[in-house]
Image (cartoon, rainbow, N blue to C red):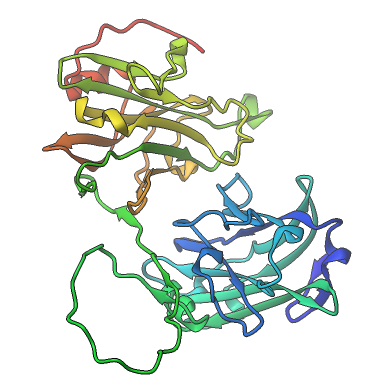
Length: 398
């Protein structure tokens, strides 16, 4: 079922049941963040925990969760309307540009669609010709009316980016860095209006090779679980004589590590050296996505409780299946640590070599430092020689 701009439709006519997925994709060179705002009856973000986005992927009730992209969809929301508290009256799906550009640069093929059991049931198409020079969009909204949920295809441009959207919905943006201060006592005054909820929009994207960031942990605390997620555009490539047949791109994430005590090793799917999280080496490959169907890509976990024992960890990826064409993968690595802004490294350089050194994580004076590399090599031995780990390599498979 096609949905047109401004159309208002009962959700029951778009998808069966209260549990479904909403997927969004934008076509073009823009870097776009997709979010969902859970609003009260006054159409305000009275509880900042109901803004679902890259820095807060799930509501406390579990009704809305943003999951990683697939080959077709840049963002997918898993939604269960039955779990939403009665205080949430409306869910607004938005898109905001991260960086330069305006929404009129969007190309045909951008859409918001409903999915039930993985199958599309309805779709709302939009493109740049629908907008001017706005930096953000309100794409669509789910809202309660007369005891049922309805959907409206909004497609309304909005001046300003994600921060402006937060403020429009009555929220406030937290300062980018955490600092403590003591203010002198203030005179007694009538109780002020409740402060606007604060939302942290911090996200760090390392732009150029050599860019780095240090993440300072709180005193006497550890980094906890360090999650390194590799996701990519798992499109089907043509292969064979005259391009007959097809093959999905299969990327594998892995790492070479070195401890302060001189211990070294490799964690990767090849050779089935998946590692361990709760014991040495305190690094584990969570899964190997051979099918390309996983929406969460591949995850490498580092136990931050033992980070003080590490010297360096080289994060890499290689094309296990598919023609070496990194430009077609649109790969991105996101490093997530509790109470820290997510760090994003994009594989934004084209190359035909089969292996990419993506980022180096180092222990520098007890602080975790991430440096963007995005350097390409013909294989493990060449990359090892360049970074000086000193392993003995032999052919392997998974």
